[in-house]
Amino acid sequence: MTATPDPVDAITAQWAAVRPDLDTVPMAVFGRVYRLTQTMAERMDRAYAPFGISRGEFDVLATLRRSGEPYTLSPRQLSATLMLTTGGMTGRLDKLERAGLLGRSPDPHDRRALRVTLSERGLRVVDEAVAAGLAVQREALEAALDEREAEQLTGLLRKLLHATGA
Image (cartoon, rainbow, N blue to C red; front, side):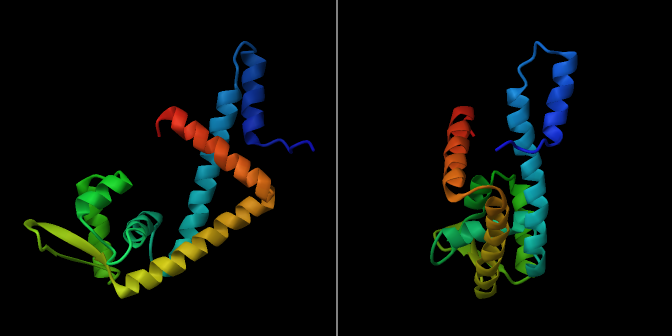
């Protein structure tokens, strides 16, 4: 089966016309990864919007949810997991706390530290939002790939991530 040309094909064809000496396979791979990332980011934004959260806020709630009961981490642990500055994390935590999705309390073992805990409402929101987000992702995958192809793509992307140190 021949794939339908996409905008990345047009870009690499233009390069081939003016610089036939270039190997544009890396450009084709990463150009598609970038475009797919942008497209899916927009779709995920729409999936999370009904819950009143952004992708970044979802990431905070999801990190707390994945930590297991009592769904509590320090701001430092959240920042490290999400690769955010403490300032960026504070803004997200402020908004999520105002929305009643999490709470902050003193750390019982360190008076200088805080603990961030998912609220009952936050738990309900993140559980519903993750299901909505997965449905969007599943729809995109099933529109193009069968199960074997999706598993193969997962393996190839994992291999590429390891090789780049990401």
